[in-house]
Structure formats: C-alpha cells, structure tokens
Length: 159
Ligand SMILES: [Zn+2]
Image 1 (cartoon, protein in one colour):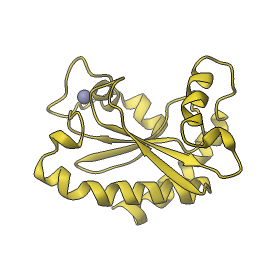
Image 2 (cartoon, rainbow, N blue to C red):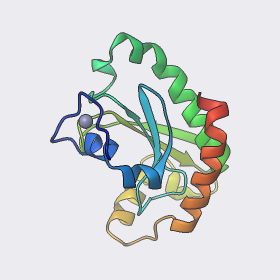
Image 3 (tube, rainbow, N blue to C red):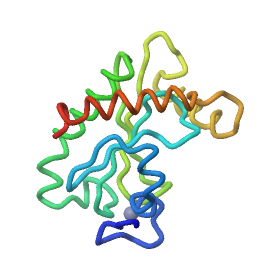
C-alpha cells in the first residue's frame, strides 16, 4: 500500500515516486520527516549519483518552511558526505534546477578527479549521453551494492 505525503501534487513525478513502494524499495537510501535521499533510478549516469528530495511538494529553498530552512544545510552536508564515502569520489556537486519536476530534488553528483566526464558541465553531457543510450550507465549490480553500503552507513551519518 502506497502512502503519499499528505500535500502531494497529483501531477508531480517526484510526489508520484514518493508514493511508489517498488521504486523506493529499489533506490531509497534514507528518509526523515522532511527529506528523502535516493540513488538515481536506472539507468543511472554514474554510480552514487543521488537525489535529495523534500518530502513535501515544494519547488525549492525559496518555498521552504521554517523547519526545512533550519535543517537544509545540515542534511545537504551529511548526504554529500555519505555519497563521497560510499562512492570514493573526490568531491560531490550539488545541483538543483527543478525543471523536470517542480519539486525540490537536489542532484548530488560524484566528481572523480580522474574521470573528466564528471568535470563541471561535462557531467550534463554525460547525463544526456546515458539517457540517449550512447554511453553505458552505471551497472545495476554495482548500484545494488552501492545501496547496500549506503543504507548501512546512513543511520550513523544522517539520523
Ligand atoms: Zn511533488
């Protein structure tokens, strides 16, 4: 039985995903009352590419309530640390456009110094190439293993 967050927007793909038990079972890393961290759905452009969503249907920081505004910095920091530790990348980009869905989903993108595909805007080219099938996505078995390790680490880092 799916439980949709009470203020879900019926036309929003992120709200729909938050009510999709199968998708969450496959890719969710961690959640709190306000936030949900998940691995990018398959095909994933990079191993460890995550999304940090607001649980509430909310376009972005400009629309935060007081509790969301208070927690945002800490949760972004700790989720980024989790991505770096589990992925073994050098840095983690944080990017949010909110165009595909007008519901905050912050992309946390592993940046590896020895992989030029992950440098700055090149990562957008990689994203489009994976989407178009021109470049191989992260291997599903690797994503499964990444999720196992991330879920084991998440309580100590994020709760
Ligand atoms: Zn939504």
